[in-house]
Length: 165
Image (tube, helix red, strand yellow):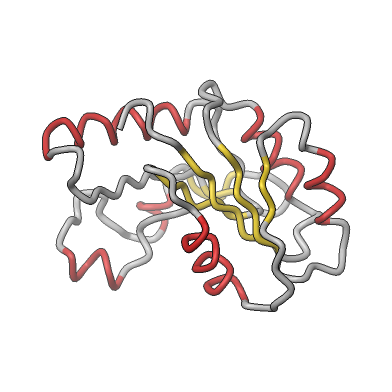
């Protein structure tokens, strides 16, 4: 997958409180060869203005969509519009470490080398849990939710929310 296109799929809805911090964390990635594909779910706050303000720092493409679909429908629509070789799901209230994309892609590339470039692959990572004020709640989402990062059984992956945005 080295050199493959990367899309960051970002669903927004009235996200003005946290969106700037998330977009800053994307702009500060140490690997910048990605596009941010955004679908806003009819926000009534300043979400659209905030997205517009970042077009000089990030490659942002917004879907022109006038339906209210909810978060699941929004991510579904984003998936329909992305043809990237690798997609990252991104929540509007996330804050990514500067090395997230590089580290995930290094892991992805290693698995692709082992299993073949045509094999479907999913890579997810642990996360630090913070509250609305940015204070740490837990160092590990997996431990906080009593999940095992080594759980790879399809049944478990499909029934537990282990893959964060």
